[in-house]
Length: 393
Ligand code: F3S
Image 1 (spheres, rainbow, N blue to C red):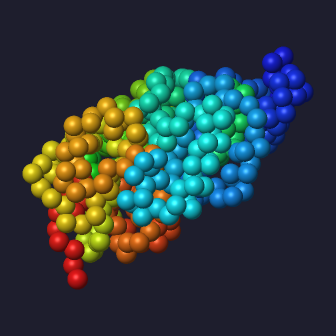
Image 2: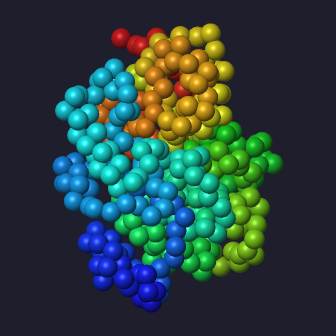
Image 3: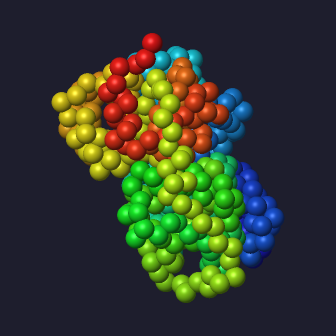
């Protein structure tokens, strides 16, 4: 790899041992993946922030680091909100360890914003290089915004944050961003446009079919929020970090991709609808990825004047919640729990339920293994209807 003078000095340890270790890690990564140089990044987002996922070893590693991040850096969701965690059944022992993890990140200069939707907090533009770790945020950044990031691991995202650069390979390089499979979704003209909430189900199916390939979708006219759901689910059931939608996503509009030689996978609306099954649930969780302010407003308006009968959890970034305080209050008045900083998958608080209803294809994929509960996918309206229904038994 070609390193400039600053990078060579970092690697030689002239800026401290931690920065040297971080450069060593990035150079090793770049060498394995054939990077020729480093590129400066504008922001980083670091996973491995929940004590549930990193445990004691991860905490010890974070504490051993002695440097500050060079670019605005935020965290993935942690295992609990910083306030009110007792009411959510979090043990004091877990809370103490989680707070130590947050303290370690604070010392590194990381903003203690804990969310999988960093694009609501940090302005990112087309073509900028990032080092983001959360798979759904990576899919959104690459596909919807047209920024460039690989799906980083927690340590490589933190290393990039500390030195302000990342090795230029994979999705940082334009030649690796072309589509490699075409997904033909049943023509919108046939049975009308696909309902918004079915994008999570489509992503759930398409991720399994695409695997590690870069899908090019035809037959869709999704909004940004629908692409957020589509990408999150594909990143969970496959390893999709970039997708294109004909005529919609920025790269698909700019570059005349030649699709003639690519495999074509048809997906029917009936197949998509088949992912949404009716089974009894004892809790409902929304906000995977974290809700936007508009999602919260929609939830508040659908719940207006009602009281929830089953536990209903709504997850979003703290600063998004702070931007709509009246809306949050209105949701809480219904008995629902609106929770910042954490999520249904990385927090121990969702572990006591047998079956959880979600409106996210990503949550459908992760809840069974991470929460030990069955998962059912439904539209937002169906989820809220379920939350307003008396529990069985
Ligand atoms: Fe976010 Fe957790 Fe879903 S990190 S994307 S809410 S699994």
